Image (cartoon, rainbow, N blue to C red; front, top):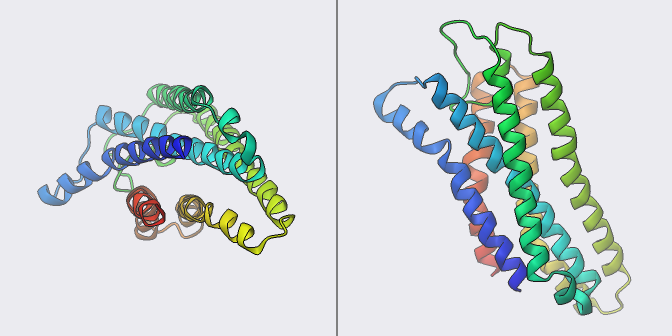
Length: 239
């Protein structure tokens, strides 16, 4: 269980940091009845938001691989998921997330903005900030689409592949008890994955389809506050 507990510790830390980038500022705004944020504060918040959102994505993928090895290759689990590999996967997740967020934030610094900007969110979301720019945003949009496709779609494809192999492996088991035990080890992870991807998809669908600031803000609260809050609850119940 040590690799999974190591990944859970990192996921918990990332979730705490993820909510800390948005919730404190939101609570201050509610308390002071002020909805103002400085340009530097907005870029800083956006940078850390992207870092921890990407880290959540990568860690969930690594955890899916961990479940795949545990169920499909149980006798080789301790050899494959050794401490060195776990540390390397976590380190690579941090490096890719930090570099991607740094690049996207620096590209926003190169944009020109008009005065009196208003974002229909309770935090500085990259897409909405770019849309408010007065200068050409072609490179920024291309970078966002590339990042979403490669760094968002890639981990999702890895998760789907891992679980397709798990389902295939479990289907071949003869024991009903073994099947139940194998699927029960994945229940918490599947719940967290469903929450993460469904709420993140809801954020972008609500902003693209309804064009309502209220519905977009509600979806964002689900994604940035509710999901990280429920993750430790789900895993604690299972543990």
